[in-house]
Length: 130
Image (cartoon, rainbow, N blue to C red; front, top):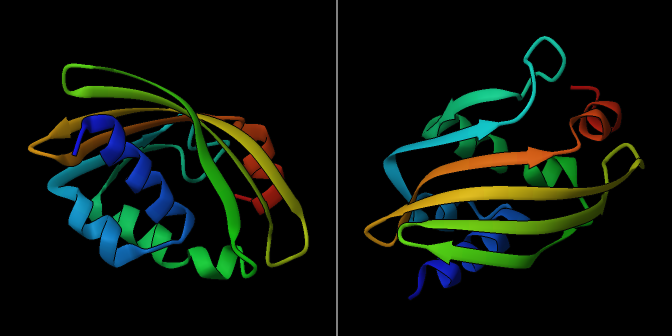
């Protein structure tokens, strides 16, 4: 599987909040960095594997009707993949979520080692109250 294929499958597993698949696709020392300041957005900053899997384990609660989350463009070089994605969903509280993302993935031996996430942090904060 190419690095781009790995990222496409990974984003699809995030869309489904498929923790079992996500767990198999990340390294033991996986890290997830989210843009922003923690004083403003609770989820901003550096996170480990356990936080990531816990976050996506609650995904079904956040989006009970599922989400439309798809990669819209990618560039790969060496062990890194830059991916643009778009997500829309209705939250458990009935709010509409519509956000654009840019991810930088680092791949090691066919698994995701690091994920850096850039998005509209204001929209996430307002929608989820984070």
